[in-house]
Image (spheres, rainbow, N blue to C red):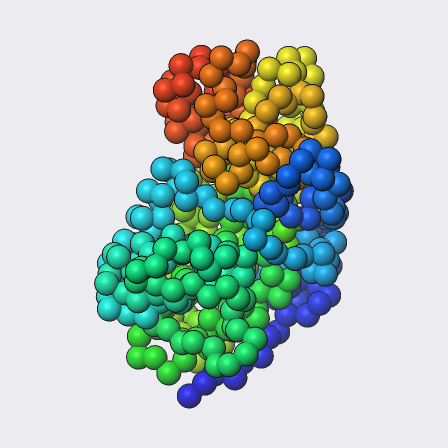
Length: 402
Ligand SMILES: [Zn+2]
């Protein structure tokens, strides 16, 4: 029997629990609306659409969101590139995640649905790990970019599809999508519907971890495309109030992501222990001061020794860092291992993106790594390039004690 639970999120107040009187933590005006957009030249990169971000926090469920987010600004296209699977560190992580899911829940010979599957890299892993069949939905990936003969298929569309019946599955995966939607409850309900009428049912969602953003100098994770910032508590609340029994919520990938595993349930109701929000609120209230210290530090350091620093990785953290700090000449170049980004330009700042090989023979003093998880990988790549520039992580800010 199909479940008939309706979304409880309202357009005003917290998008997860509808709690009112949020705390406004930090404002970043004029961020590029699409930080993964590939721009053809510096001028068009500087002229991309921009939006304002105010990170607000719900005191009731611990959810963060951009209270200035305008869904009408969002529009995805084929020029959008956000695959992280080029990095060996990320590939190894995704492989471990797929293997763990298959083994923990015995996901073998099952139908797997992935919402927002990119080119199907994770779907492929989970199909291979358990002999499963996969179907992925991804509006921004050209279908012809997926190899024929795979155990999975990708449909270039949002889920649920606009026309026809929505496919059902035994396992629904959804990684790094929920934070993009203004009404996350609708997506969780869609996953619940997809699992209806199945004897075996499991949902696995992965999102950025708000605690990492607040607590672990992850402030560069704030991007316009992410309208929602989930804590363990708000993610649990969302699933428990929309037809799921939560099995596990893990901090993964160096604490940067939350992975939730949940089983379909007819019981509705959140079991939030309000006390667990104490630490989150404390970190949240310190965010604006810590952000100012980090911004001042990097502006001072880069202005003093500007022009000879390059950034490794043209991902979202780089886009926020360059745009929020209004950096231009202080950074000479951005390099990335994803060849689809080469000779394109960073949204908002207009920095050219090159292959790491471009660093060989360049007078580079410092390579700035935006994500501490990639520090070792970048240091090894620099050695291979025979480039002896100092490798520094953006979170290495001496004046901070958190
Ligand atoms: Zn809330």
